[in-house]
Length: 168
Image (cartoon, rainbow, N blue to C red; front, side, top):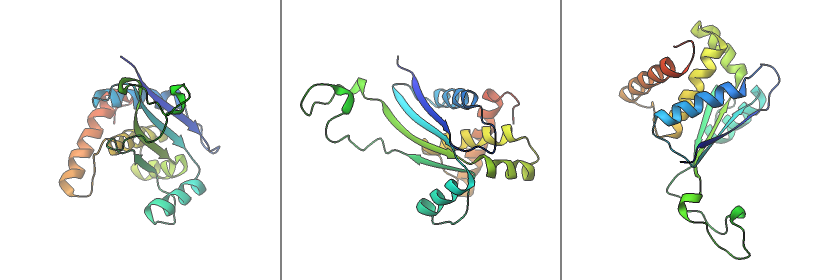
């Protein structure tokens, strides 16, 4: 079985981010949520200014936020030629070779640090929560309604207790 690939990048310089640690957490949560490879997720850490720009562009809010998730609709069929398929014509590889693109998670450590103070927890605990929260959003979880929020928060606590070294 192919693994889930998690592409991580730290594009901010204010806070130290252990990419390997957060990739491992993301991979464990995705596996527990039933995601099997080949699949891809990106995990990006950005500064306040970059997060403000993304939040304005996609959510209409002119301020940084802690996490944004951008799920890729699995119902969308690829169009055109897959670049890595090889060959000279518009040939698609067989479906098992095409990774499922799950989506992108963008986290702002600056906002996470401020939230950690408010939540009386460590920055690591806050980032762990944001990784889990972002993944659940990619997988269709939501918290618009009170009942949904309660279910999502309970699932976050379960996943953090199992996969984050400090529990939550």
